[in-house]
Length: 489
Picture 1: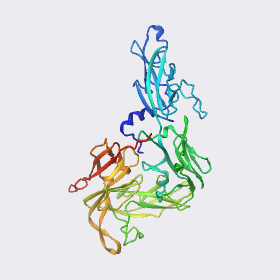
Picture 2: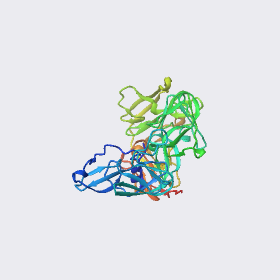
Picture 3: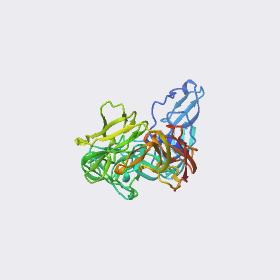
């Protein structure tokens, strides 16, 4: 999944993700009794847990705890982890408290371990570790997370829950899941303008639980839909404080569990006239050898919603052992000319459903040209528009824009009414994408995220698309503007 951290906060976030509990086995000497043998302590340092990496300043955020350790260095150059033996104090507990093993977690799970920093509110504090007069200090500033949101992870993307269903629109307010399906949840927040995954710090649950309808795993953040019912509202809470994802009621996204009534396969490349059924005169296009095609298993739910249930389905090819194509997950790879049938089954909640099979021909055709264009992350296209505005993204956002490479191939294929039309097919996953300045915007060239651009910092970059399938296909260029980070207090 797309969980990497970008920009100047990367080192900070790694520190935060060290967690609130300091591990016992750090590989550092305990030094018990060393002073009595003449090996005197010389200095103290506050470090990131399990390392000897000293930190003097730290940016933290309300509700997101972090662990630090206290190291004592001796005159024989040995070092010991004394996190549980120093006296920890904070100059401003209203901004950040520090535990000596005496701060309750707040949810009945006991106490925070020694060295845990618990941000209480915006402000600044000096954290001191004192070992019999040998001290080390850490300056901490605390900000407030903005825009805490529960999202779903679908095809390695962070997806707003009200856009989860395949037939959803921006105006929709809820979502639906089929019995026997699951969804990976994540919690994001804007930290100093950078949208960051903070799932590690959150406890996910429901506003009002009903374990007969659905559950959320406390360890994996997996939402499991069990039996028809609802609505339920997924929320995130944080042990140190009362912030939740539904402080803003517009973020309270309800969902219901529905029966999966039927399933069907949705190929990436549609028939020439997509408004009409597939037929001999309106067939699905051939998959060009060397190219790939994504297949989505769509579950048709009792309330009319459509859910991507590919991850819970089984995709197969007939004839078995075909050399024309092969599946890698739900991506069909065309290997040689031939003909195959694609089918899918879904057995969730005992449904035992089978999708009507789809006939695909694979053929060898020369790539003659490519065009590139962009859409939002949810949109599939069959052709690029003649003109479109310059693409733009917001620095620090986990919401990408998606570039597409559309290939034009030599030869023709049957079209509506028996006419012949050129073969055009998306070749985004077979195209190498690069950014002129990854420090401003990055672009992926791998798998389902190929062509996706994420903004890092304000500026403008040139996106390059290069497809080496045919030597006479020139590289293409496009511009992306990265809008400034939206700072909030």
